[in-house]
Image 1 (tube, rainbow, N blue to C red):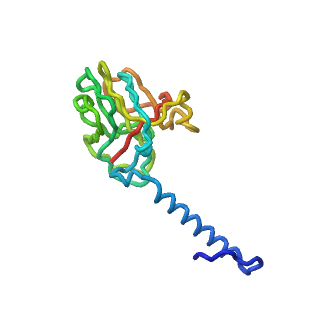
Image 2: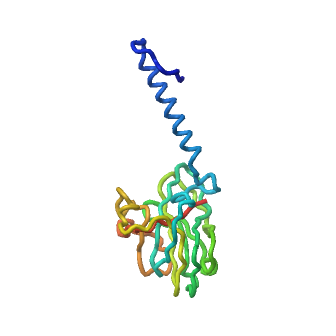
Length: 209
C-alpha cells in the first residue's frame, strides 16, 4: 500500500507508511528504468552481452584463438542459437575450422554449431543454430567463437580499451566477461580451464536465442 506524502511528523505507526512509500517509489523507479532500456527479450533474444545499438567498431579475430563473451541467463530456458555480427568478411578460411558454441561457467562445452566457413565469408548478422538445443539453468554462460584461415572475419564489438581490466572490472580470469584462449585450436575444445584464459580488452557483442 502506498501513502501520499508528506506523512505528518509524530504520526503513530509511522514506520509502516514510510516503508510502504519507499517500496512503492522503488517499484516505480525500476519500472521506469525498465521501460526506457532495451532488453534482449525485446529483440527476439534470451540474453546478450550488451545492447547492440552501442556497438562501436569491430575487430578481426586471431586465427586459432578461442574468444569468449559472457551472457547471463536469468531463468531456466532452452538455448537454440548463438548470434554474432560480422562487419568484415573473412577470406581464405579453412574448412571445418570456423565454429561458434556455448560453454557453461565451469568451462564445459554445452553446445556447438556446424562449420561456419561459408557463412563467415560474408558480412551481416550470423544467427547460428546449435547442433543440439541446450536446456539451460539460470546462470552465466559464454558464447565462444573460433576462426582459422588467411584473414579471419571482423566481428562487432563495443569498447576496445588498452586495459583489459576495464571491461572485466572486478572479475578474475575464471569469471571475466571477455577473454581469449586457449590458442592454436582448430576446433572448440570440449572443456576449457577457465582460469587459464586471458582477459580481453575487446567487448564482443554476442547473443543467445
